Length: 203
Image (cartoon, rainbow, N blue to C red; front, side):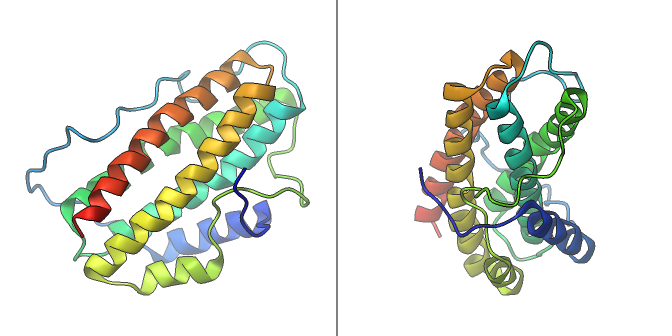
């Protein structure tokens, strides 16, 4: 599994709150764009639906780690959506990522609450693909095509980390709903990875 420097949930959530406050969204323009290569929305239980059936430690860890991981993806998307000089296709996929992961965040929180498990990830666990504060600052400061390219490069790595964690859940998890979400993440985020790699070629 690919690893990144250890980033605790406390740091991840702090980054999410801090950046969200200073990075207002800017709606993408209405300029037509071919979205045929974009991935389809995740197929998973609706947000806030309890995860039925038993769960094990792998299910808990998956939810605890994927939660701040998704929250950082929203932070990254908000940063790029707050810029006015980004290619339309890049703002489109940033919006797509937000639309897919925001309801999953609500779902993960609901499951952990239902299971009686802490929402925060244990301090001694790594989350693959998480960006450091310095890397997020680079994205905040970049402009135009340079910002678009950096966003795509960072989000590809971020998605690859999520896919790794989801594959662990598929292999080791017990709860059927949690495993279904993991399968959805693997499928949809791999499609987005492929799409973003193609976008990079044109920048």
